[in-house]
Length: 325
Image (cartoon, rainbow, N blue to C red; front, side, top):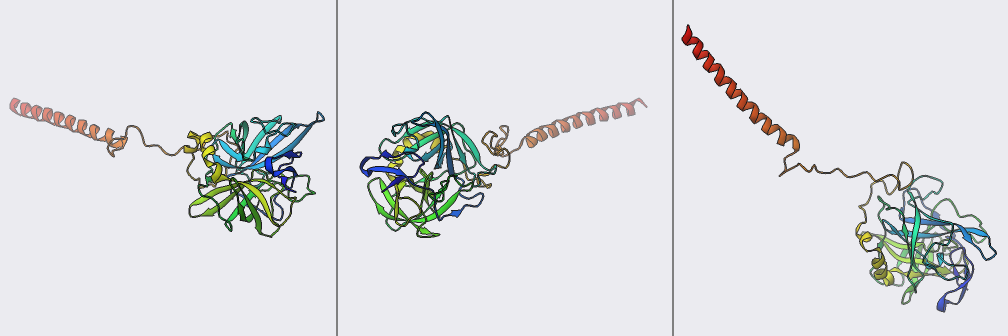
């Protein structure tokens, strides 16, 4: 039975049939500090439950522009299991660029808007501040091919008996095994054949790495209980890329240049502190001359004129004096 990969109750998902939760990147590897800073943990604190109580949960995601994160649509649902275009918890925030959640690297931002795709299991969430200094994922423009290799990162559980998500981001290598109209299947290949996404890895990014940079090709949707061999299902990013661009609009053009610090923010750990501005050329610089040159040249000219006038006066006084003797 296919299972959603967020820690939520069973819902109906179109032709996929009845689904229930599954569990985190099992048999994966820990990600070192500074790697894959575009990875996002989406924390939801105080989600209402049917019995009138509250619960906490989380999903994974990927930064696709300074203000926007891509994740799974089913991470935002009401008590009836219906997808909603708003946050449902008392507090919803995103942690970006922090491989070790107990550390202070990266950024923390509140989620202020949710935009659902409507058909595919994908949503975009808007952050309350721009995440500068981290290069977002590039959206895939080509249909994936069977046999293509990809990497997944996520903040989910690591086995079906775990009750706490790990403090460190985890990763694994996968292979595309099937390609449908808007979805694809991916199976674990390393570190083990049973490497697989699990509960709270929902929305995690599958991506390729190469000379063209890091390209987002899929978003975790659902799969069997982990760990397991065989495929999990992801939404194809190339199939929904035009919709993503229509939501991001100008924010996509505002993507920052790569940072030499690999997205880590040494002080504060949040986006509250503005990024250090690049050195600016002074507005008074003209035709390659610096302000010092523009001030110095006229000053020398004026000094020379004063010198000539003073010399002339001294000469006249000298001649007059000579005549008086």
